[in-house]
Image 1 (cartoon, rainbow, N blue to C red):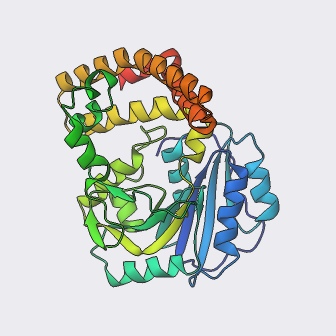
Image 2: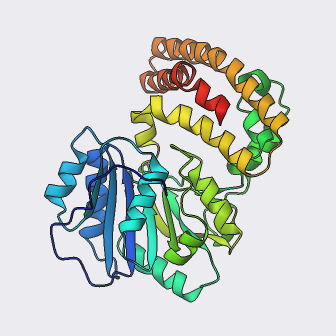
Length: 335
């Protein structure tokens, strides 16, 4: 893990003895969502001895102060700025004391006894590398909780210049949702990083979270690394509520560029040829201003037709793409 300037972990109450599970949360703003997440953990029985460790990435909305005041039992690490999800998650894991680690997004709610269910599964199936729950949105609908590993062809379908041709539609569909079945326990390629449970031993053996990812794609990478040691399992009968993309939408200027850069790093790391990566970078770069124009036109039409919520989403995408072109294009090409 890279060296960072950060204050030592804060604790304000006696720590539980030898926790079975350490819940590790990387936080950046979203104070209200984080409060509800912590309440869901502490206000009902989880059936195991656990601790919560939060690495806060320089939140400006009072999130760290809220944790220190309202949840003194939490181990709190305060970074002075945004170190990214992977670095903060590694910091939380380094400060944690549990045999098992449960990496959890701040925009989740954890039902009673969820940690016990995961612990029982892990102890009964020591050959399994990592477990992930079924994710359900606040609207009550199932969310995609696992996927296949992405391919360059799948991502090329997202390039507007190519999408209309239909050349890579099947590859994209297979990657995004073709295999998802919310009712089965099964081995999968990639778990969504909103909530993943694994032993400290496996986490360390797989190299922890790769800190070359700033925000996004690191869950794909971790699943890929863990799968080389043991199966990654989706567990349909364990469920976590996930609001989804709250931090990304609130900080779109940070999220969109880092996701684009993250995919390039992942493809390079997994052996994609330099020529193919070069072609992908060219297409993404040329396509970005066209996508901005399309999203702004889309937003205008949606506002005119009274679809204000959807119009705001189109504007957010345009803002993220503009941040990518204006501030992160050089880093994208260096990735």
